[in-house]
Image 1 (cartoon, rainbow, N blue to C red):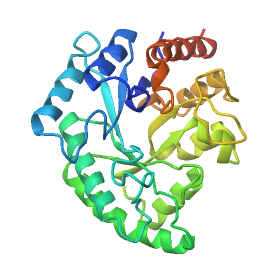
Image 2: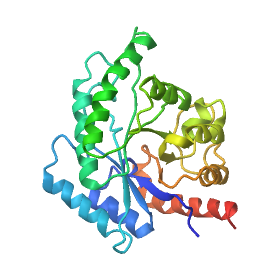
Image 3: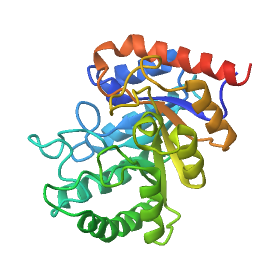
Length: 285
């Protein structure tokens, strides 16, 4: 028996494979969903022609023996916008024009793919700047993205990240309140991050985010620092995390997030789904 939410795998953990081959691996393994990171080496929204997006949409629709795979769009490619500075520019930088264009195009691609949401992060503050300056920039820029996403009928999901301005679920919820609780803005929660920065751990973070939870990332992690690891190599109680997702009524995509393990992708694609199904059997024998 499968969980009531959709088990997926992130393509940022398959960066040594061309996208068609990556999707073949996920389809053959039996995943319900794909977390598609836009950018090289797969689908760059800034340069991909319409026929490339249509080809991905067709492949997603053909997965699961023609039933189709769900998809969420991720935007965490490290050096796509600036080859010398990881993730920059971000939404909290003084000049975020390139990031805004990238996210707008990600929304367009998500609409064409029928994606559940576009997941994104706030970014780390530039050196010497105060949190209030970064928050002001977010509050000024997110309404523009939300308007564009609403026009395309696409939901946005802000992901708290260790070390970033929006670091915890409470940070994300506070920002959302300051924006007037827009219905088009939800949260992405990475269960590994919860071990590092969330006062209430995985269970507390998921329950706090539940009313606006749009996307979930699954990975193991040590409690001491931000390092994505395969299941069983960190401090995550995987059955407990899956039980909480079921208990809060989550029905969206929960995708494995292993962006530094592309070298072992074929084995980890299989092993991760095995670990997830085994953990679920502990929850629902």
